[in-house]
Amino acid sequence: MKYYFEGYEIVTPFSISSNEPMFDADTISLKKQRASQGAQRWEMSFNIVTTTPADALLSIIDFDSVQSMTMPQLNDVNDRLTTVNYPKGAFVTGSNNKVYMVKSDASTIADSNLYPTPPSGLTYSTVANATIRYYRDVSDLRGITFSDGILADPGTINIIEAL
Image 1 (cartoon, rainbow, N blue to C red):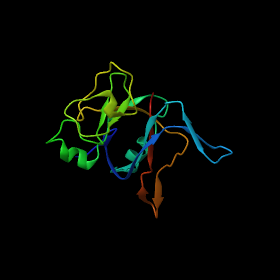
Image 2: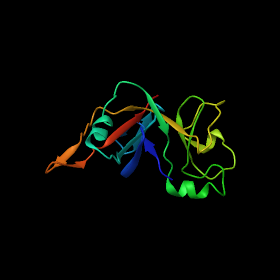
Image 3: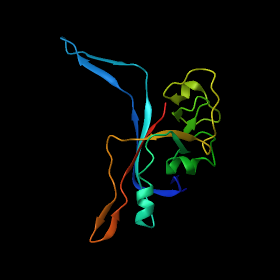
Image 4: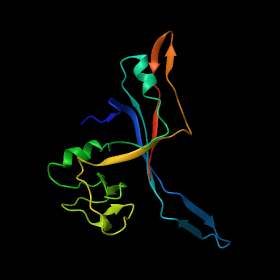
């Protein structure tokens, strides 16, 4: 299945990361102590297919507003959708607009089977209708690259989930 960013096909390299800040400390007895505030967001990085330099330039603007797109699913998730409604590794969107990942194959959604653990009482999208609301990440901007006057790389798109 193909996924798109603002009308442009997403291609590899493609990464999905979970950003969950964690405090990690060693005690005097060398035990590990870890603490988290329970906050988590999804971050993605990918390239897109463009046909002209103008398309590439247009794809790297508009950083100040929340956008949305279909949440890309892993290939094996798409393959297993024919046998199970919510395959392990699938993404769904809660009624709070947060994206959650299914931890094990299921025919229906249970809060305990989602990462991160959601608040109770949410309803969820189907896997096919999962949507991520995002901001463009401005901490690591990479623009287009020309080599010998030819578009060599339209740049990397980095997005972070809008919470």
